[in-house]
Image 1 (cartoon, rainbow, N blue to C red):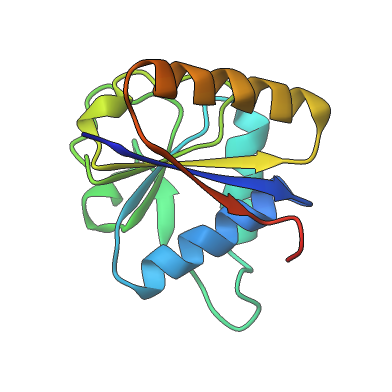
Image 2: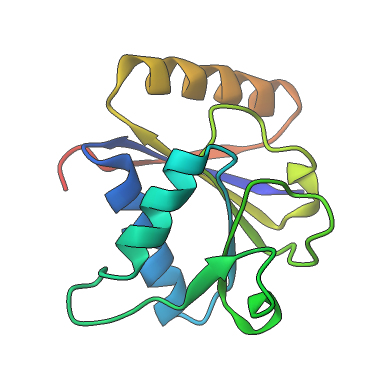
Length: 140
């Protein structure tokens, strides 16, 4: 069963997501980022070019010719993507087909709309029997 992790209370949701992606890369753990909104996907892409300040997290769009050899993929759709280990959800909806992934990471900011949508997703996962683990980012 998919493990569900909620990282909540992030002052900057995109920066928090990129820090988590940097940690996954450092541990050689591939990650698929579900970001169907172009603005969010673009922000993640731009930030990964400079985070960390003295490093680089290899990443590309899931439809890039380099996707097969790149550890961090940014996707606006989850259809036809072979990676099924870790999924980071940066949308406000339940990612389609999330249950095929070993882990689902949700990153939630402090914005009221973001928090409300996250509460709905938590309820959805719990109602279906998934254990949800929480990590508070508000003091980081």
